Amino acid sequence: MKKFLLTVVTLVLVSVFGANGETVRILSTNDMHSAIEKMPQLAAIVDSLRAIDPFLLVFSAGDNRTGNPYNDLYEPVSYPMISLMNLIGFDASGLGNHEYDSGVTGLAKVISLSNFPYLAANITCPPETGIQVAPYQVFDVKGIKVGVLGITQVGTLGIPDTSPDNVKGLSFQLPEEVIPQYKWLTEQCDVNVLLTHVGFEVDVELAKQFPYYDLIISSHTHTQLEGGELHSGVLITQNGYQLPRVTLTTLEVEGGKVVSKKAENIFLDKFNRRGEAAEALLKHFKSSPELERVVAQSLTDIKGYQPLGVMMCDAWKEECDCDIAFENYGGVRYDFFPAGPITVKDIFNLDPFLNSPVVMTLSGKELHDMLIACYNADRNRFPITSGCTAVVTYNDSSKLSIKKLELFDTNGKKLNVKKKYRVVTNNYVASIADTPRDDQGERGAETTSDLIMHWLEKKRTIDYQGRSSFTEKW
Image 1 (cartoon, one colour):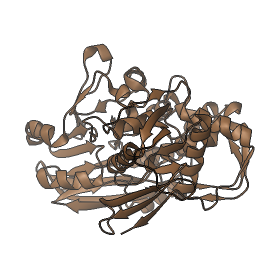
Image 2 (cartoon, helix red, strand yellow):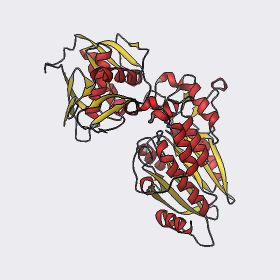
Image 3 (cartoon, rainbow, N blue to C red):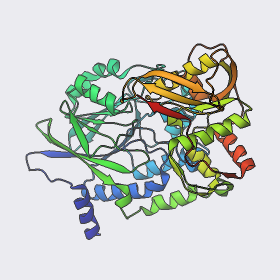
Image 4 (tube, rainbow, N blue to C red):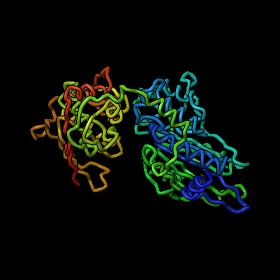
């Protein structure tokens, strides 16, 4: 055991400061996205660090859920992830945009099952929603006051990046409007932390505007930082998608001020110990034979978001008897699938959001405008299509704005801007690509993942190696 603890100390380089100062240590995660298979490793890391520092704080910056069907199809939704976070002993969590994926009722249930608070200062939850969210919390670490202010993401529609149906009754304010209201809190605390789910680039701007914070625990953009980065004197940390690493931040406090700070990554895949209690819980939650059922075979490896997205869109198009289908690039949740069996679990991993198909009749011009609106709302990533292809010309190599968009049918002819096409997307995309159009669409009863499963069961074998739906120029 002593050797193991020394290994942990070497791994994370836990510092011992001089007698004149005290240390605050924070272990932070972000965008875990239902990575329940890695939670036993995280449990062992936390246990080992708490053996060194019993005052260790453990925070998540949000998006704890959505990304693993064992968690996301469980009833109640996300109970496996919450149970494991409770077992590990998280001290607080932010609210990511995917926390809203099961709607207001689902979020209220998740919060009620959690043994830790959710922090978001820029959300208003009326009592009838049953959602209990605090704007901030102050933690006492050996007499040091650690103030943590939570900020949830607000997208282009004035709500988080989720379907508007998922946040009915809730209201949101922009981070820069709310953070100044809590300046008083920073004056009362020795250590000040922003626990945000807004994206790395936005957090860099927040650091410029509010340099009196010591640390921003960042998330949402899955930006893998090497430890942390200093911006305007504020330390910012963030890790990638589904727990590739966690961050240990060590702060030295003297005279009520942070005088030294550093952040270091811990690689979960390199940590060979797993918590026994968490392992037992994981085994229980993964006992679902239906998710292991094989529905089809892939004849080749499928490499890249485009080929997998084209496969998804082909399924939606054919199952909904449409001319064209499109999906936002960010809706395709992994970029490699090996040749071999495709299971129910694989489908839900690829399309985990339980979205509904929306079928619309659009002119070529209306489709053109929706695709550009989807690109703008999806962090400048062009959507993936079936039934038509696109040539996207950007203004420059940064790909931050489109200069020209050309659409072609399956025969290589340009789409007629006046002709009407039967088009399917999902309810999330229909909401973020909110353009003027005559037909707002009809929402289907099944989920888009159900459509993929039914289509694959009929196809039995697929080969999408090298498939694409758009080319890019600048």
